[in-house]
Length: 319
Image (tube, rainbow, N blue to C red):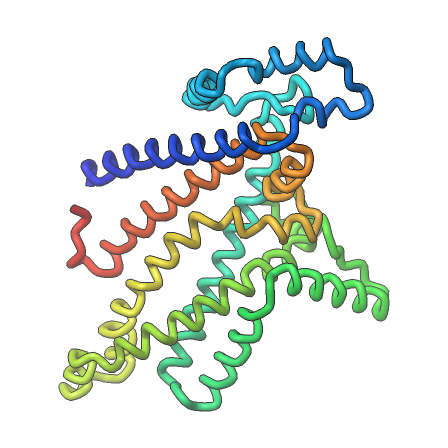
């Protein structure tokens, strides 16, 4: 186990270095001058030179990248171009718990709805229950998340106008606080976030479960006279979960990335909305920081996925 974790941590370092290099080169070669863009109509040549020197942009690219890696090793993401003298982490630190909360509960919705419904559809394959479940899942899966989000907002506004209620159609409560005032604006964004993932997990769970149910050992278990519940939940389900764990690892890594559109549409102050605004503002240090955080999330998600393999199927050895 220790050897496995050490290998993964070493792999994490290589992944982060590779990601930082790609994002740095993309920012370095991108057209336009971010300092010039930030100055706008207040452009002054001497101030422009001073700012470029202050941010180290007058150095060769390899020296800029080396300085970035040195600061990153000390968990220093640099200084924002947009908000002068403000550290990047100071901008992101308030958005991280918000995005993590949205992503966490969205994933819970995906798993708690998607996997049981997929399993039920496999057990009742070709019945009206299966047709209804998969039909609804396909419709939701086919709709882009931003369309579902806008549709949800329209429904909220319509209900508020008809009933006189004051259900919030945007904003977010205090992170990880669950009194009614904080919980109310979180419910709809979480359900919208979980909708697309639910549909995907439901269809995948149905497919994998159907494949497992056709295996010889399942027929053997039934031939021995075991109860159907034991065959389904003890022999078939554990093997059907293995492909789902693989997808779960990727889903965990991309949780925060999936919040971008939801945060923008529902005006949620997470790092997704901050990242989109930083792209518009050419605030490269903020963009690079969010990309690094996402890369760490992907690697950690895959690590969790590998660890879950040993729980789902003890025959799988980490080495």
